[in-house]
Structure formats: structure tokens, C-alpha cells
Length: 170
Image (cartoon, rainbow, N blue to C red; front, side):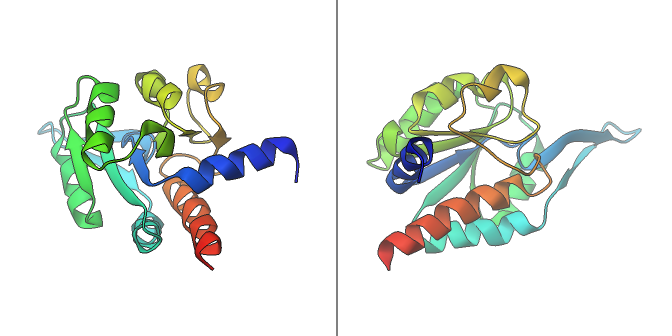
């Protein structure tokens, strides 16, 4: 195992909580707008099973989004995921949420895709960006998914973390 992969494995081992951005992570960053102004987005069905695997591995997760949009809340409800949306300062909210759980930011993974995720990505123990993330955040990441946002990236992250923790418990 290379030194870089060993470092990533150590970061993964410490993860107790995962925070996900929504737009561009759970979605492909596309928004459909009807003539009535109603928005809809496209998500990946396999993400739900991935989140279940994460929970079974003892890793808590939640969605943290700057968007105030019923679409985010409805998808989170369907996934049975905690959702905090309309968040102006993501890092402040992330810090509060993990502290409430008795977890340190070094034991937290954050999954994002754009510059409004940069502060959170810099602050956590495991910074993850999706394959099609904005170039400004690519260099911050400890891990870049193979799958694009809304195209299985969330499931990939869940599988990565859950399988590693399952091996750790065995």
C-alpha cells in the first residue's frame, strides 16, 4: 500500500459522521423549472441503499445545503436523512452539528462539489469531492469520486466508508 493510500485509509477509519452537500452531489446539478416556477431535480436511486449501508456501519449522515428548496427537503425525507437547508454559513452549521453529536471535525467527512463547500472541505478530516466538482475545490479533496454528482457519487462514498468500517469491525 502506498503512503498516500495509507493516509487515506487512516482518514476513512476515523470517520464517524458524513455531511453531504445536495445540489451537484445528490443531483447532477441540473434543475428543471416548470412554467409555474416549480423546480425538480434528478437524483440517483442507489443513494438510498448506500445511506442505509452507512447507517448499518454506525456512521451518521446528514444533508447540509445552502439552498432553501422543497426539493431538497422532500428528497431527504424519502431517504430518511436529516436535512439542514437554507444554511448561510455551512462551516458554522457543520461545526455545531458535529459538536452536538460529540464528534470532532477530524472525525467528519464532507462531500461537496463547489466553492461554497470549500471551508467545510478544508476543516474536516476527510474531504471528498465528486468527479465533476468545480476545479476550485478539486485540490482540497483527499478523495475524488469516480462517479459524477447525481450519477452514483453518493453511493460510491457510502460504499467506500461502510465497507472500510465493516472490515474494521470484523
